[in-house]
Image (cartoon, rainbow, N blue to C red; front, side):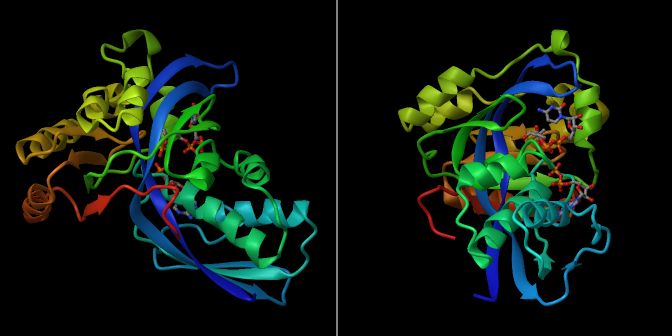
Length: 292
Ligand SMILES: C[C@@](CO)(OP(=O)(O)O)[C@H](O)COP(=O)(O)OP(=O)(O)OC[C@H]1O[C@@H](n2ccc(N)nc2=O)[C@H](O)[C@@H]1O
Ligand SMILES: Nc1ncnc2c1ncn2[C@@H]1O[C@H](COP(=O)(O)OP(=O)(O)O)[C@@H](O)[C@H]1O
């Protein structure tokens, strides 16, 4: 095999709770993660030169060693003594700095792709150990599907697939820095925290209402305070028939969960007509059992 085509999917956080702040500045979290069928396309090809060449359709994403795919490829290739190089083409669809882990997913899929291309036969556990050195969400982006994430996000427990639903994604034209949001969090000021245990029960019982009733994201306290438009989008999602709506990760992306496909399609149409931003997508959830 000389080249490979891959999909790097986005995630949403159905629940995001912070347990405490660690001495190194990172936060201990308790999150329910869900992969969605919104994806970047990645093409990786072996080349004879010993370099990592990155090409992408988005001008403001770094192509050098600051690109998360570059970091992932460098770590893996150094650790396993791969002396040839790779050309990576990234066709980006997932909005950047959005709370959707687009960059983390690109890096995760790069590790999976290189593992195949160079016949390394590494387990997901071994790939995750490399991924976590680059970003807390990368191990989850390797596992994918419905999962409980603890620690800094890297301690993962796979859960049963979430029941079928439609996910409307709307990102206002604001860029949010994850590090900045975490640095401004006041753990003692949370008024509402998600009930992660009840959500896990809802997932096991395949009860969409129970799952959505227990959604919650403590990072909203920081990002919504700065950008009230996020709240307006949440309210609009509910007006348009979402059974629940929340900010994903550190934001600013808002997602709405719809049971009904027609309502979701109508909401997509209405959101596109409004001046919320160019990044509006209607998608579905992705389960580990699906291929690709
Ligand atoms: C908030 C979440 C929720 O899934 O997602 P995004 O909004 O980024 O998509 C994640 O916790 C983001 O994970 P990720 O984006 O991989 O974080 P990293 O690159 O490792 O860290 C960026 C910065 O965020 C802070 N950070 C990250 C994770 C964590 N558990 N505690 C933290 O305090 C640290 O200050 C770190 O310097
Ligand atoms: N392959 C990549 N795709 C997207 N962003 C990347 C990539 N490599 C590095 N970055 C940088 O990472 C930051 C945000 O990454 P992203 O994963 O989109 O954020 P979030 O986790 O909030 O969704 C941006 O500053 C971006 O320039």
